[in-house]
Length: 330
Image (cartoon, rainbow, N blue to C red; front, side, top):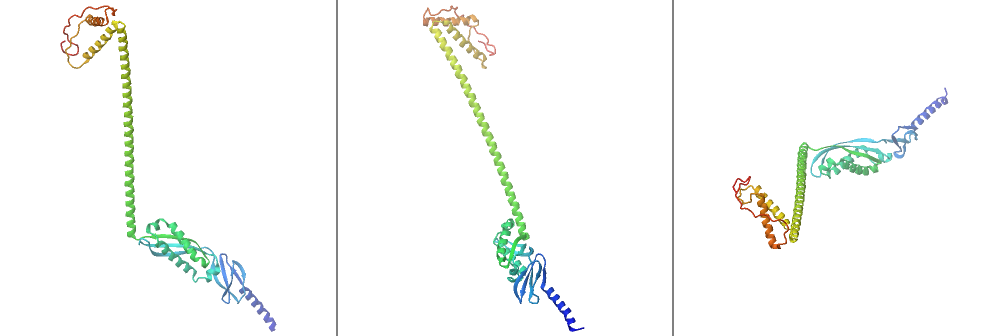
């Protein structure tokens, strides 16, 4: 076997070895950096790539997918001197492989320390009540600060979240008592407001009832006065008519008017609850005779020819009698 026959297989094997050394396959979601004599030259994208064997080599294999980094628990002193334990989680993604590979040493450690430092800075500038009630605000501030600091490393911070905030047990007990006192205060305030509203409503109802009652009394008084006014007008009208009749010489009108007043006065005496002694005529003819006497007086006043009615006999002497219902002799 000649030397030529031995050289050809060796060359074939050498070519295959060189080809295999120059072919690089990059998986999806990764980027590889290529260095030539220790200097970065280019970045290999996912898929099949060729490099110059023995001159080029792979520098760094970088995961370009979004990654999760747990932030361990650390002690934070708040603005109001409350000592709390805080842990969190950070999400980041490499956007520029050369910067992530050559701008920082130990990328994950750098991101972790940067996040922990800014957690202490941001949360240390707030009081405990703000920390417990404003987690969204804290997350936004942390994300903005950490993303700005990691931008030069070719890193995009997608999210920074605070998982747990654990105050000491004695502080938790104090917060529980404070919450209970606050709720008791609100309950007392609500009860007082309800009592005040009820009293206001009762006062309004009493006011309305008094107003309606006063309006009712006013309306009744008005109508009573109106009735008395109309009665007085009728009385005045009757008196006027009697006066006109008397002035015209009609003594019978005067007799009727006096008899009416006489009867009304007698009725008032009869219905009086007191016991009284009165003198009065016993017969109806005596009452007519009294009216006739009054008519005679009227004729003397107005003249003999004024009266046109019949004359009546004189009033007989009165005698005493017992008025029914009074229990006394008259």
